[in-house]
Image (cartoon, rainbow, N blue to C red; front, top):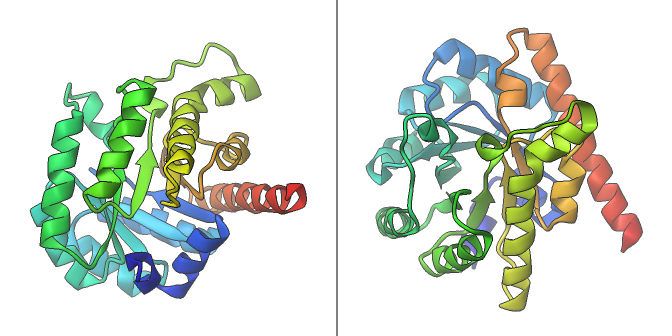
Length: 259
């Protein structure tokens, strides 16, 4: 039986229906007030999953405030244990965006090593792993296959930090999302060729404009962080999450119509 079948029902259903919206408060965001605001906005706006820093105290705080399932992100496998005990439903290696400004990159072999160690430590927990965006697309696809062999249940893409949009408005939003969209498409095609149905989450640089493109490219879910957590007003945060959720629902409707 798939580990995903052990997830809370709303999250399990979102994976099955390809309608997952993950709100990201930030792998390195340990500010309790900020995380709390994002968590409350995520639930009020209709998101499926909250992705937050791997800190058991923060997990306990969020669990007291909202009922939304939690995924904790880190690049140190030993940190996950206390957060799982505190109530996290999923664990994730990555997203690496916050490290790039520090000159820190994660090569394929390191990501594989982290995945093997994490799966060994937590054999029954749903594990998502981010594929580094700086790798050539064919290398990202090859790595994704190896990660699944190592025990990854979900693969996530990234790329927003590498994009430098040249255009304003809608065109600029598409340019911003293009690296992560390209990754999802290539990995999705590779998985199909190998007969795999591993869920793909498209993350980093997305907006309500580009979420439909993520689903059309093969994603079963999307992850959005900065578009929400850069806001300071709770009402604005909730409105943004609702806008993103509406885009997810519209994408699902269009998919059903086309099929």
